[in-house]
Length: 192
Image (cartoon, rainbow, N blue to C red; front, top):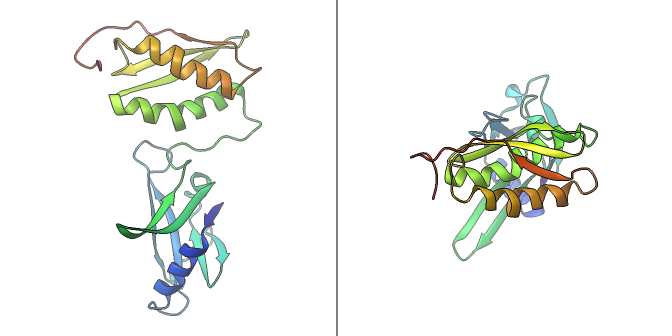
């Protein structure tokens, strides 16, 4: 579920040595599965471990994850990096904002996951988003743009050179194309 680098494990051992005996590290996600999801790490005294928590054993300590956060911390990586600016603990959880779908999920679910986890965060920089409306029998993904993408002068370029290329590459042999069904209306919300 969570990978903790050797340097991060050493850092946690050093921190925990200053805490009461039996203290664990808790890894969690606040607002999991939403665009506002935030990951965190805190101390977890032994009496704060719940029955539904998962305990992961590392070198010299346990990491505790609550049941709600578990699916959103799949593939998470905690590292402790040092550079010319100093040192810091980093936590990267690619599935915190969007729950990872299984490999045997439907094609539409897998496409929507890629859009939610990789494409929409980029579109959000311009106030936009996109979602799957349908997947045709011929393998065409029909999309609906919203926010700043609605009416944007660059939407065709975003669709053909960005989204379509990524999805056709990612789902080669399963998808044949991408179509925009949005009735674009220029306005103050659009990004130019």
